[in-house]
Image 1 (cartoon, rainbow, N blue to C red):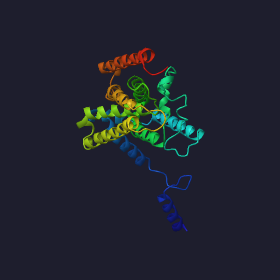
Image 2: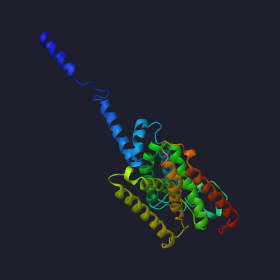
Image 3: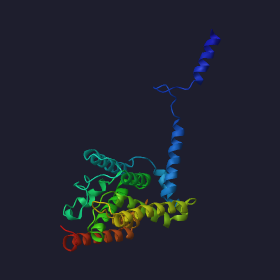
Image 4: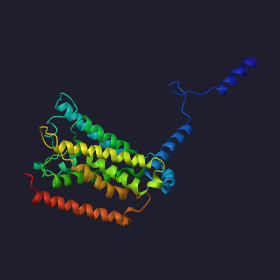
Length: 297
């Protein structure tokens, strides 16, 4: 009996404890290593070599990338609302429900100033919203892990506003829907950061990643120009200018924000140059829309 008891005690000593559901608990060390590997990959994508150690010392998911997630959920919710509220035969392209929306930017209703921002929540179809959401989640979440929500949110919203203001000037008769201005601001900021810090930031697949961005942007903008000028579908013409203006906002304001990791942003002269330029553009667009725009009020 004593030998049997000893054998049972030895077996119990080597038995792996189970969790409440009967499974084996995850090794905490393995989980930590997995998280560290994830942050290393993020730092290689988003930061030059000399800043990676600083990021890894501070890296955590608190706060989580809440801005990009909330914006994406809001855009998806608005899309579903209009798809259900205005039943469609198919969801590839929504009907005139979105064009009657109080969120859509329309030149004849530009005195309703919120439309210069709110158009980002409305999308014209499944292809439109899926493309924008995939790009902003794929790029926005890593950017927000590194630079946090305030910086990413500022760049994103600067692209959205720049897109509608530029469209009201350079394509004044066209309506505007979609978050492409914000998405292109994130792309533009990351693109400039990748180009300037090419050797340190992307040592192996730099050419491939930059070419992928160029290919995606070129295809999307080309398709937007095709829909604007070549197709003759009934309904309002949708502007493509927001894509370009959002990209320019990203390559200026976004570049400054995304290259100022662990630096005093207010002491950076590039920051003030971009802010002054953006404010000047904003006031010019306001004056243009009030006094000079050929579009009907």
